[in-house]
Length: 226
Ligand SMILES: C[S@@+](CC[C@H](N)C(=O)[O-])C[C@H]1O[C@@H](n2cnc3c(N)ncnc32)[C@H](O)[C@@H]1O
Image (cartoon, rainbow, N blue to C red; front, side, top):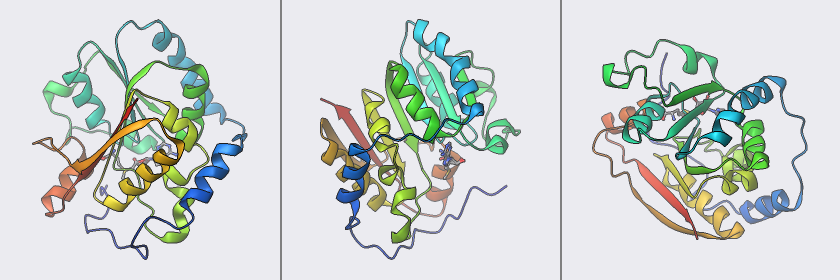
């Protein structure tokens, strides 16, 4: 299976989307009421008790793909509970030997689940999970201008996304995605933000590895709640 196109993003948009403010304001003023999928609800319920009774840090790795970053974060934070979420069963469940060396296998503080984040985020926000760090690494960029609402900051769940985590980190090879997410967060307010190049020496996800191998720069946006 391929990890996507490693070519630089081509978009018909050359700046922050003109409708960003309108879209974010619409989502701030309307409650997202689509019913939860049963599968995601079951997965959320299976973790809810453990998360609420956990005494250490809880870290959420959203769009975790095969979970390489989830495991690396768990190794770096052995006292934390690290939850990786992806909607793709193929990525969550398949053999990931190629990305997971022995030092990352069988870490006791990793939970990898298949769930739709459009539902999972709302459940986490509603339950007020005490998430310390929230990662969204290389979300699908949806570079066509008409697809703004498929980007996380254009989605109906953006208010809940921003309510999760004392620190939120996004990474992308398309800096405009991060600039736009940041602009959306500024509309909502309450964050200090830093946007720059990824500082990790070694890639922490397969997409990051692939972009770097093709000579692209990877960027990170860090939002810290004031
Ligand atoms: C470009 S991949 C990045 C995967 C991984 N973070 C990496 O860097 O290798 C984006 C991932 O987001 C997941 N994803 C997209 N929409 C999602 C949703 N609504 N709920 C859960 N996962 C989603 C996809 O299944 C995919 O694995």
